Length: 308
Image (cartoon, rainbow, N blue to C red; front, side):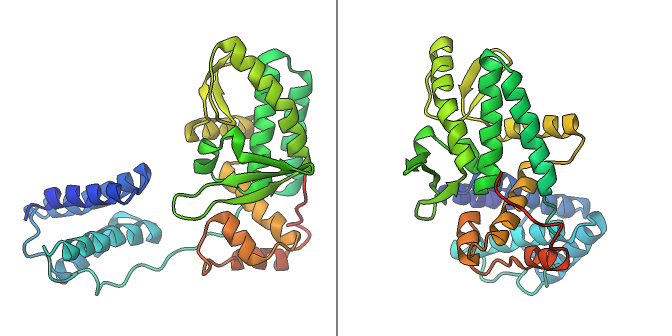
């Protein structure tokens, strides 16, 4: 069996399972590294004769090539799933990689943006908003709301890309954002009163700008140049650029990921139940919040977070 042909069928199978573009892309990259290993050995890209001993040799190859045990583990796991797929297609009668022990997973400690720094970010954005005019004022409000969606609600970049104006639900002056996962029931996450105030100011400004630019969309956010809206939605790349620019201007390290971690510390400080935190994070019940809890226990004064 021609290896690359079967790999392409496997990747197509992942697409049919509604795996994300990035997930399929990562699997393709990981499988190509195995192909590279075979090529460097002078081995034909053929599935015949692949057994555990050769795969152990591949693991040693990865250990020499990569310093990160997580990278090694991921690439071995990609092969494991590929052979599982071949078994379901009755093209292989066993999984030769099953007997290989995966590299231990390195768990990185959280690196949140500390609360005084978050207050600094908010103060900077508020000042820009107060001094801004016209389109820049709308852009400043958009950025303030973006910060709140992440720090208040722990929204991932992938969720921010898809959030619509209709996903913001207001009742009795309380604001919640609706999350619509692909494989779970929708749920809502509360946002702060301050975020609600920003939204009330943002909506009419956004509608007026959309009319001016002759553009229409349902997204909460937008992509634009310094003068006008270009399209609805804010891409992962756009969010990354925003945080890089913010980091440079304030001389601090801040990203969507580090701000999400700050949110988790805040929820711990607010005694939000672990099960609720995990649901909002979109992780499995067995996911451990131990590193967050340990850091709070070791230095409680450092990891005090509150609403903005």
